[in-house]
Length: 91
Image 1 (cartoon, rainbow, N blue to C red):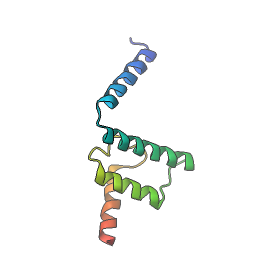
Image 2: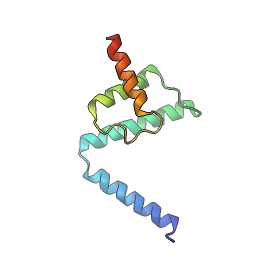
Image 3: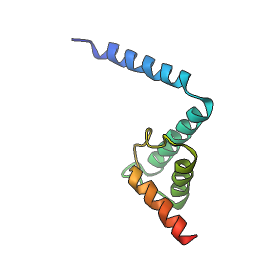
Image 4: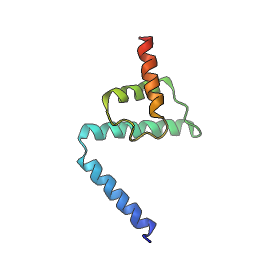
């Protein structure tokens, strides 16, 4: 059995290598997505309540970055697509 510390180290190394091989723009978008989720979490602490600005951020990210679903933690992909469609209908 592999000790948890070794597994955590290997996981961190794989994450680092993946980030090192990513294009800068993709890495910046992923970083922005993770920071925005952290901001929502720190603002609410319990169940994340998204504001209109948070929704606009996710819709814009959906349009700019094809792999936008990978770093999602607090928002389901279907929800973001629904916001996008609702905004388009309003337009």
